[in-house]
Image 1 (cartoon, rainbow, N blue to C red):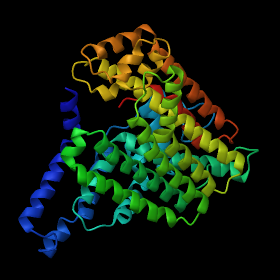
Image 2 (tube, helix red, strand yellow; image 1 turned 45 degrees about the vertical axis):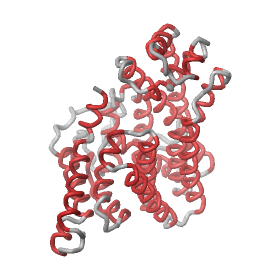
Image 3 (cartoon, rainbow, N blue to C red; image 1 turned 120 degrees about the vertical axis):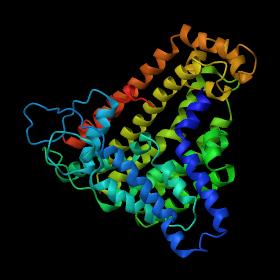
Length: 424
């Protein structure tokens, strides 16, 4: 069932890959027919894909009108009650200068998405037909826009602090370098997904790219993002983002080295949290930090941006693991053993030593997954993980509390507050 769900989600990519493959064999060369090559070029397809994505947002119904008392001049409410609403309100801040209080998809798409359309095309700039498939993968999921959104919101929130931290002022502009940083951040993230899917033997990704093509696609994105990063001409930002790339690789190595029975169960959970930092929160934290560096902020503000991103990333992954556990626990007979090394199971191990041998043998015996499922519920591990996530949510909010009041800061607060309601 999970396999079918994954394949359904990626069916457009699979179809696109088949079309590209057929195109190659029909023409023998992408350049054999100049006119057709121009019409079917990867960049044109990428542009069409982004346009189609934008159209789905433009045609969606607007959200209901929401207002905040006594702040008539601000378009931002700060009262989002769900992850979806928090995302839309936050996007309205970086995508539109319109001062209305109705957050509909037109304002969500706004100027920045259309600029991103051209910018990503230029950054990818290649004549190879599989680049359009990367573009589709890039815009496939709503999740794939969280990181650049945070970078842009940090840019706006920290720019205010740099000017006059003693009073409330309008959000400052986002610089071109900060917009480019947001694009670079997402390209690095997408490259990591392509590589992880090969390592994890993800069937959907293999169906779209094949292992070799997926690795090359990830390498291509990293290469392009590195060139774009160098063009920022900021040594500190280059170092921060290069560190992220190293952390992503190190985090994957850590995940491949599964916990062993003789490892102290408490240290095993600490090891897991370090892995979460390497694979998830480092990229968010360092890119947020880089955004404030590009704004010329003080070290105090730079640290606040880093702490917010780090705690956001940890809470994000912990809650992801909770959702993943509830999904695999409902399908123990068909779930992958590797999926069971997650926060709830490792948290349960800290309370129940019986889980040690099961984890050591990688849930290979019949009944191991069912036993692990029962022990997680018996030890209240799910609740403990959610409590830990809530602690990091509060830390994220506290870290930016000293920044001047602004819509951008409020958006950052309500985004992290609504993480528990996010649905994959």
